Length: 559
Image 1 (cartoon, one colour):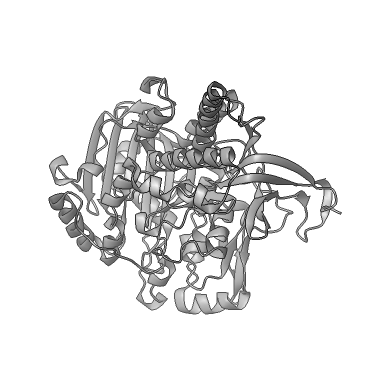
Image 2: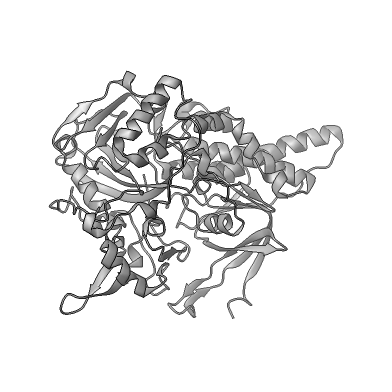
């Protein structure tokens, strides 16, 4: 019934995901087409006429699922919008002061700027809200004649004879068994000459295309970080607007890569975040508990005392670098942004790289439309990227994240070599195991210290999830799926059910019988903030995530 009612929309280019990479690509494509047509008219050549471009996003509105620190390097904005001044971009404030500290359990040690690689300095950058940035970019796209639709969850690639020819948009109003309810609305098939996957970190269709087409066969395994972030209203006078603070050390142990950030968006509003590598070893590590520990550190607690949490979110980050990038194109489709892995872990920045991937992809797509050739060789912008400033930046940081797989000391030594050699060392190609394989057995784990919670500043995990605005229709099928319930028993026996601790939204809980015996894992999918940590870190690869109904999930406002 549902299949018979589906409509078809024919497009030239379908952009799946309304993040910085795809919005950049869509806008750049229109720039390119306009330039192509102007030249073609002058030369009496064929125009690219009646171009149909659509950008879709699974969130309730553009920006609902966009989260970043965010410190923005404006280089790609200036390239995309050459006539816009920096002060007119959707940034909050320039970076006015840059500090770095090593945190002990109860103190801090300042790290002088000369002891840090130049990549870790933020002069010339801006503090921004990624959700606000994407909304601004979506308006720019609409002004250029590009349609942007929210609440469209793409759940399947459409293929013909081995090439991608579009995507399927999921039906709405299905019950837990997949049967239509009274609110049923059929999805549609978007048929396109080119499909651009810019779904963000670990994109659903991107991951499946990478796997099905073997695009990462010659790449390093992608490795990931997880970031937890709150926006906190604080009393005046604690930290000046534009101040940027990065820390490392506490609350992470010396074997765990990561650190924290404090960005002063306003004199009375700070973004506090903890980012750590998902190759961590301790099976009893608890993401939200570590975040609370950070907030209780005397330095951080002094800044936020008397404050109030106004928003919360979590997101994974692709940290594998240039050696973990997959092949970027197949016949009819191309990958951009976080879904492909464009992020510089040394700088903890990826927005400018994602945008540059969109710019370079759009240049190739314009060629494909003009020549009516959307084959992989035409769409593949890898060589363009390698020769760009973005490729040089990622190449300089090529082994940075991998060096920390051996612990903090090994990573700091590698960072020192990077500084001394101007980025030439560590050389070669370093690799690591997938993140899930680094987890030790529960017997070697150390449980976190518990932090008392309250109703305003030190929130428990469920209250934080509420602050994310996360909503899912609870009578639909769970989009966080445990593949084999029996494996959960093995996982608990060996690893003490780590899904109940690594998830930053308490999606997974132990089911216990009346005598305290473990009977399985309960999946509270309505809590999910779409970070996909569960797919990455589950040691037995027993969890699959897929998009829920379009419009569901977090509703970020200023993240």
